[in-house]
Amino acid sequence: MSAHKNVKRITTHVLRSMKENNEKIAMLTAYDYSMARIVDSAGIDIILVGDSASNVMAGHETTLPITLNQMIYHASSVVRAVKRALILVDLPFGSYQGNWREALKSAIRIMKESGAHAIKMEGGVEIEESVKRVLSAGIPVMGHLGLTPQSIYKFGTYVVRAKEEEEAEKLISDAKLLDELGCFGIVLEKIPAELTKEVSQNIGCPTIGIGAGPHADGQVLVTHDLLGITKDFNPRFLRRYENLFETIEGAVNRYIQDVRSMDFPNADEQY
Ligand code: KIV
Image (cartoon, rainbow, N blue to C red; front, side):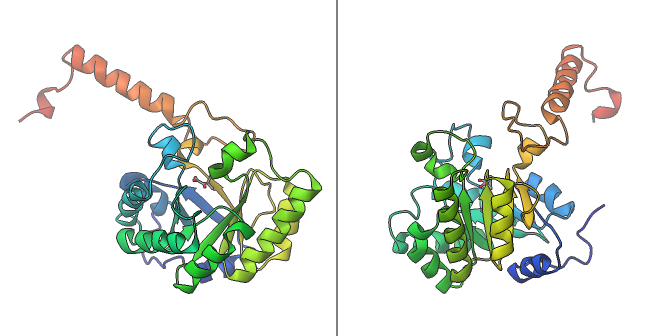
């Protein structure tokens, strides 16, 4: 069913009241016009133009190579498609870690050049000043804690984070800080379910989990993973709703056969 008729935009205020009313928030990624149109039409609450575009769209091993200009290109394409969802864009690696001036400049470029509604940054106390300055420019910020893929070379692996007490304590204190600074939400990636529960119960802004259990205020997945377009990524937390790799491959196969056998185009498919 299309959710485009009589659409009311999802705002950061709507998301906060969803948490207050115990309504779960559904978030998915999109990086291009066509996918964003489908995902928005289905009624998703937040579309994340994630730096996972670096993996999914460009085939890189990590999220590190994608540039600010490339993120703006993806975000602009999504903005042209979306009528209802809040559009959130990742600040890519290298565009904000240097200092708050750089962070502010990058966030302003995303908002001005793409027309998106909010930005996301990875990290806690380390990026406190940047979060403050971006928020003070009127730009909504979502935090991202736990497994933060831009730090993959520091972690060394993609295993579950914050299982030990020290890291869990830091995560709780980072989440409280981001909430107090005024972030409108926090992604919690690949952390124990009980830790997600504790964080979500102790902060005012919604948490959005990925591999973080059922107690987050919302869930996010990479759309290409959920649809089974990506093939080799099979973490325990991923639920695949389709196997579009095989569906699309099968359709392309049939097309190739039809072209070769001259079944396509037929008499009705020509002028
Ligand atoms: O870039 C991304 O897709 C993300 C999600 C995994 C949360 O940050």
